[in-house]
Length: 493
Image (cartoon, rainbow, N blue to C red):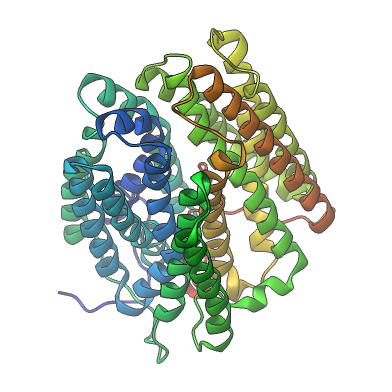
């Protein structure tokens, strides 16, 4: 095996360059695919495994807890031990967990397997971008990331449609088993064509203690919120105490660590803090809406899994078409206006969706609100990413984008954990009660999104022109949580 190198030489149009893009798209595409299809499968999972609302919440949140808490560590491990090696380890973990998900005899094993999937995804998602950035010649890096992002976007777009068809035609288990052939091809291509790269060795080890503390903190808090929906007893109180203590410990560890997973000094920037607060609000609204709306479409309106997945396809298509244009607009006029207007448009779309009920017509009642919702996201996401990256020095761009991605994941985690209990949602109370609970939750989401717009107006620099990120975003503010200064697009090799 050739010695690892930190000098990128692969050109975009070369055979090796094409294989590297294929390997990273297939590997990370598994994580993106699962991120869009599992929502559609929840009613079928609940029926097959006799799972209640809390079981469905954990099916989503077990994955989000490990993914959001380990994203930054996943990138650091690639830097320390080799990006291809860690990427392959993530692929192996994700694939093994996918098989366990597909074979799970009960909801408890499914939840455990989903947590392991999140661990694998935390190495796959940052690893894919790190491989691209460290492998391609600096002159071709932006083109490679753009191609990866477009193909990853296509994966996210077909996910709900393909997943819905598999669920209706065969079983929800197939959406997880589908990862096995994808992983086999991705692993072969990675081993055969992707060179190993790593930066000069660092004397400071990765921040494992920080990763453990934040993982325990998020998991314990999520447990208290989800399980406490039916009554907050001693078990839930103990979990909340453990979670809060672990999160406080995480902040303390990050202050003292020689190589912190989260350098706290990045939050001295008002714009960086404000952009992440906007991310938290908008992506909480997004996570809650996608979780609950799919349940309503299937449980109240009688949609099949395929119909429910296809009904939200316009959101992804609008994002694919308009995100780069919104990024270019933010580059010309600054991100403040798009980040203020976009969340308000998101809120308007959620208010429209809150009016959907039994007997609603898709073309006249649902599609207009879905389109407005998608337009709001497209207006917000790329300018938000640009604002985050513009708020920090070049040396912290990788950390900044990683923090922003993790914040988006945590926002979805909290929305899934908190919103159902906050609005009194009970899936066993009949279709009318379910619909009313979902409507209340969507209105809460609309309020969160609008608040995000107000935060952006108050904290984002007006008129500050920023450089749009090289990669487009697809339902995430940034797919690039691990690029270091030496890997940032345009940096010297």
